Image (cartoon, rainbow, N blue to C red):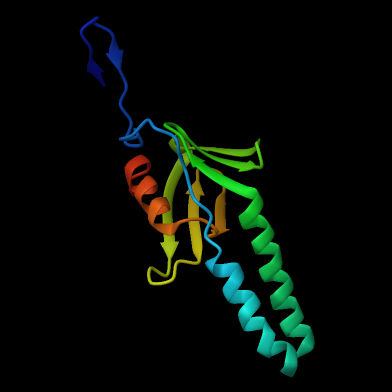
Length: 138
């Protein structure tokens, strides 16, 4: 705690964002496109497996088109079209990680009461920059 010029004590947090601007991540179609392309030759050898991979790729493609992540000053917000569907306050985050730096495919973060795994359907570089600014790793 510290005292400001008015004499009131202020509380500082290790999760205080360095930036107050809201950042919306651009979509990245890498994972869905790779899955659909990989599924094509597999369909010839194993139709059920190839079909399942292709359907999963198409599902992720739909999610890429419809979902948006926004980093605000205090929260990570997930939108479907214009509707807010989930809010994750940074003050509840304990840890985060992006798996496979060369070809990022999975974003993990742990809150006080839950863990989350999200496929990276958005720009991984902006994601990492926003995470480092707003939620430094403990």
